[in-house]
Length: 410
Image 1 (cartoon, helix red, strand yellow):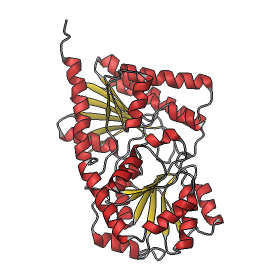
Image 2: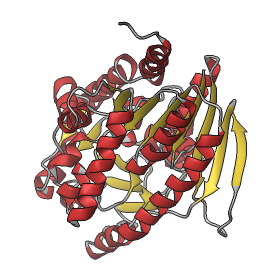
Image 3: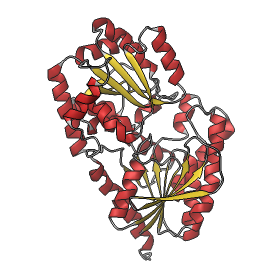
Image 4: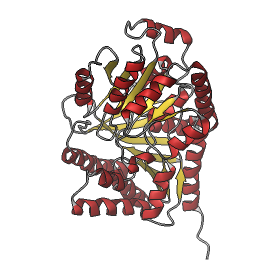
C-alpha cells in the first residue's frame, strides 16, 4: 500500500520532539508499504520556497520551510497552519496514494488530507492528538465566535470524511463521538520506545558524575514543551517546598517554549536557579534516554483545566519506557493508571506545598521507588510498547483500505 502521511511537525530521533510518526512510518516501510511524509522544516535559518526531500529508514520525507515556534502569538501560529495547509494540499495531490493519513495538531492538516484522498479516490484516516476546538475554547485561547464556528466546522469536516479516526486517549475518542456520533474511532495512545530507552548503568553513572550539582542526589526531571498549557512553574514551586524538607533534592527541566523565561525567573526569585533547579535547552530525542536513566522520577504537568486531562504526552510514555516513576498534577486516564498500578504519583493540581511534601517523601523512599519502577516497566511492556501499538495502527489502515476496495452490497 502507498501511504501519504501528513504531519506538520514530523520529527526523527536526531530532532527535539515526539517521534510517533517517525516510528510508525518506518515500521510501515518494514512491512512492505511505501510511505511519503509531508511536513515542515522549522529549524532556524533563512526562509526559502520549495520542497526538500530526504529518505530516512526507507521513508520519503518532503520538507517545506514554514517558520514556527512556541513563542509565537496565536495569530502567527494560525498563519503557519494556513500556510502549510495550502502547500501540503498541492504536494499531496501530486503524490500517488492508496490511502491518505493525516495527524493533528493542527486541525488544518485534515484539509490537504481530504483533498488528496478525494482526488485520488482513496480512503482518508485522521488522527486526533489534541481535541480541537474544545481544548483551546476551554483554555480561553479561542474567544472569537466566528473562529470557534470555523474550527468546529473544520473538526466536523475531518471526522465526516474519515473512514476511521484514531484518538490518542479515551477522552479524545469521547470528544470525537460527542461531536459526530457514529464516527468509527480507535484509541491508540502514544507509546513507550523500549529499545531507545534501554541505557547501560555505566552511562548513567558517567552522566551523574559529570555534573557536580547532581552526583548521587535524588533527581526529578521534566522534559518537553514549556508552553502555556504545561504550567511548569508548578514544579518549581513544589521544589521550593520539597527542599525545605530535603535540601539535596534536584530538579532538571529540559525543553523550550513560551514559558521558559517566566519559569527561569521564578526559580531565580525563589533562590533555586542553578542550585536546586537546573534548566537546559531542548535536546534531540536520542539524548533523552540517559537523562531519564539518571532520573529518580520524571514528571508531567498541565494547568488546572479539565480538558487537558485527556492529553497523551510523550513524556509520560518516555518515563514508562525508561522504567521511571512519573509524577503528574492532573486527573483523567493517566491518573487512573498510576493509582491502579503504583507507577507514579498523582499530585494536587494547585496545592504546590502538598505536592512538594509528597515529592520529598517519595524521592527518598527506596522501597516505593523500586515498586514504582517495576510497575512503570510492566505498563511499558504490557500495554504501551511501540511494537504492540503499531499493530493496532496498521490494522486501522488496512481495515480502511480493505473497506474502500470491497464491492458494495445491495
